[in-house]
Amino acid sequence: MPINLDKSYSINEIGARSNNEDTTQPKHEYITAESRLFMVCDGVGGSKKGEIASALACESIQDYFDNFIQPEQVFSKEFIDKSVRYAEIRFDDYIKENPSAQGMATTLCLVYFSSTGVYLAHAGDSRIYQIRDGEVLYKTEDHSLVNTLLLSGQITKEDAKNHPQKNVILRAIQGSQFPVEMEVNKIEDVLSGDQFFICTDGILEALSEEEICSILNQKKGAETKLKQIKEICSAKSKDNFSAYLIPVQNVSQSKTDKHLFATFLSAFM
Image 1: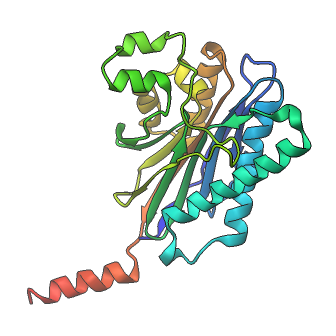
Image 2: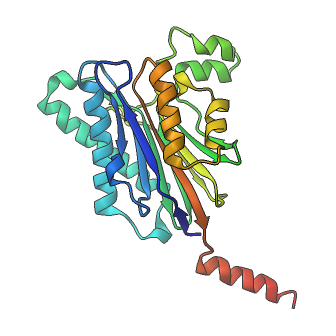
Image 3: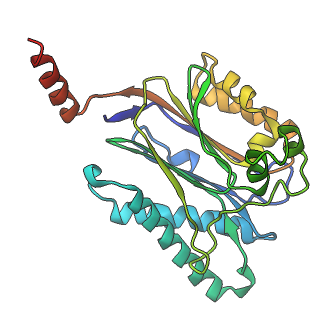
């Protein structure tokens, strides 16, 4: 099921903060119709540590994909896990040379379009959505203290909005001493017109899920939709905010799919 994409667009904004701890990969100017790997990271650690952590994670995982990508037919969750382990080793090396960076960490959202489906991986409270006809078909669950309390029924959605510990995340990339457990899913239900939206929590601070869906359901181009999101977040968000909007142009049948379909039809002829 080869998936063909329309041109994807991204935003990566400092917002109301003094420094930008978000990183998007690839950078906006390097996105092409052939791009298949997309990442958004939100660094934590204060001072310059957060922005170093997010940039290093994206750079390391991109390097691993570029150098060790497997044939499409055998791509798996394990490859993503290995790329994250590689990033953690790079964290170790950096912290060893820069002891003041001890404690730096980052969230990660990764989307990879393979020939057999879409792999979604995340750790932390940055989020991935699959949206179809203005409705959320799939979304990641935040690895955060507040979301854990919410899912267990200990607090309400209203409580979660202003919870004093809403920024406490439970999973992050931070080095091999604390290997992160990535949550990885593969989606095979992908149709023409689907949109994949990846964002940091700075977006979610300014826009509700319903508002995001409403904007993405407009009959406008991806770039125009992201500009609208950027304008709203610039006015309302107190955090850095970053996002990718990845529109699916069409989904082709693979040779295997065509063979199976032909075999199925022949059984009734």
